[in-house]
Structures are given as structure tokens and as C-alpha cells.
Amino acid sequence: MPEESPREIWRRAERAIVEGDDTVRLLLHAHSSVNVQDTEFNGTPLGWALYAWGGGGPRPGSELYYDVVAQLVAAGATVEPQWLDASSRGFPLPQRIREDPRMRAALGR
Image 1 (tube, rainbow, N blue to C red):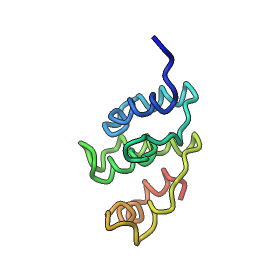
Image 2: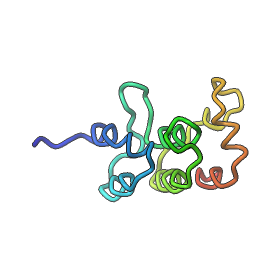
Image 3: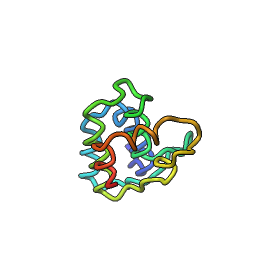
């Protein structure tokens, strides 16, 4: 079987990130790039985790996402300014982040 690129590995893991399982821990242990973007939405692992936490996943606001986000940030994931910007695209994620001290802490803010 050919070796998968980091982008392919994270793409296959997006579902796991959204569901908040231990795949993130395994990928980080394997030193996978945390800022790789998928080709369909240009989402990063951190972006997908925040999206899922903010309402786009099967368990919005779940405790699982705080740990996933903190792990990704600790591993060097880029926190995009628009995720914290009040004027960001009408999606309520920036407001939810600002109102949640645990998520701000997980993001290092």
C-alpha cells in the first residue's frame, strides 16, 4: 500500500476530528502537520474541530472538542484571526469563542 501524504491522512481524519475521537492524538504522536488544508473547503484540523464544536458536528459544544483544540494548538496549529473576529461571515463561531472562557483558553487566548 502506498504511503499517504499528511494531507491525505488529515483528510481521512476530518470525520474523526468532527466526532472528537482519539485520532487527533494518534496523528500528533506521528508528527503529522497540523496546518494542512483539505482541498474541498480549505479547512485545517483546528478549523474543523472549531466548526464541529460550534455547531457543525454531531455533538456541538461537547467536552471532547476542548481537548482536541488544545492538543492542536499545543502542536502548533495556526489560530486564524477570522475565527475570533466579530465581523466574520455571519457565522456565530467567533461570538461563541469569545463567550466561552474554556475555548479561549484552549486556543491560548
